[in-house]
Image 1 (cartoon, rainbow, N blue to C red):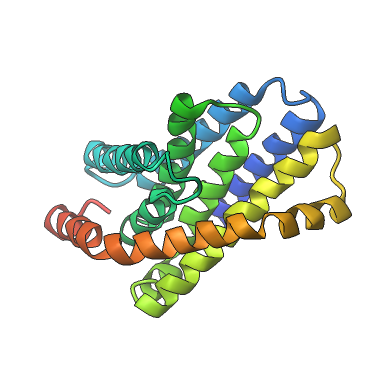
Image 2: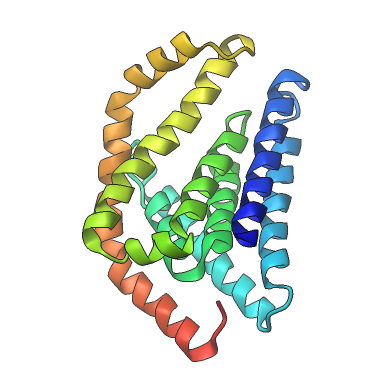
Length: 226
């Protein structure tokens, strides 16, 4: 229960920073907000593992997963919306836990945006991918997601969740205020993108869960890192 409470506190802090970035800074400090979320995600991992051995090895493995996700986004850049990023984040969370899932998602968004162009939307991407990873890594959830049916369902929901969070940015970017009617209009308009995201997530989860999952499981069993 204590761990869940910590996760809620971290997410509350991140959401508060996003709101401050929109309302107070008028989006002009998006790089500051992005770096703050990145630092928070790193601190989450450090605080979770500070009493465990093998911290450097954990960081190396997470760095490899972030690199794979960034490379996946770059390779599939010509195909809009169809990318293995979310799948890699979810698989990381299933086998390495919530903290690893959050940092993989948030840092993947930040680092890949250095190639594709960062902007006020970057913190929302970091938050969206981080949350998807964190939820997938919850102890009960990650055991459930090892079943293919639940994994496919989560892939569909992950695509919808990512789009729903990014639609918040879409509404706020118009005039800096949130309007629920405008938000639902944005959600309805983005349905084709939600379908692409969801199909992409399901396809890559089904393809990658076994080869990547086996490697992560083997590393964890051999070295007891996570």
